[in-house]
Length: 236
Image (cartoon, rainbow, N blue to C red; front, side, top):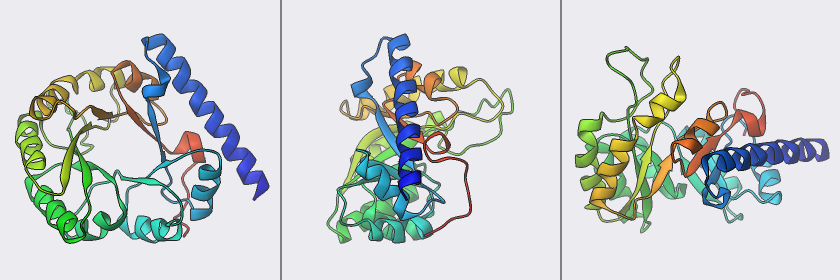
């Protein structure tokens, strides 16, 4: 356990150094960046070790793994982020533990999350996931709502009791420069802030493109591999 703690401490330091360097280049304050540790396929013991090291934001992308992990760590003051594609029939389960839902991409999901939040007397921060695929280039899909649908989704979230419109989320398409992809996020960000000016979250950037995301204005980085090592089969 001590060896794993030392490994995670070193990785966390390296990621924070990358963030600080990217912010210096972009002329931004690193204090404005929220690091979300993506712990999918990793045991709850890794969550606890990172918590001991000062990490407070954790993300998961599958409810069947996230729910028991959150329960095992219920004694910790963690902010849980759900970052994966979410089926409406999983909304009630995710609403029990997640504080921020990054992947809201359709109206039906907005209604399901709103219903679940009210039943459980919780308030969920929701981000509109934006599709950054370039239809002309034929980019492979990474999920999200087309730009034309973003205003309606933002309005729906803002109008749903139990939900708070927090901002936007995006994943850079595979095989294309991340900087150009993240630049396409700006109109969606503006559309969401037109609905709620306080919706300032921009969740963009992972282990391989956090520098480009910071340059494009990201406030939340979803970091898995760089922080926890190569992905492995899920362990509870």
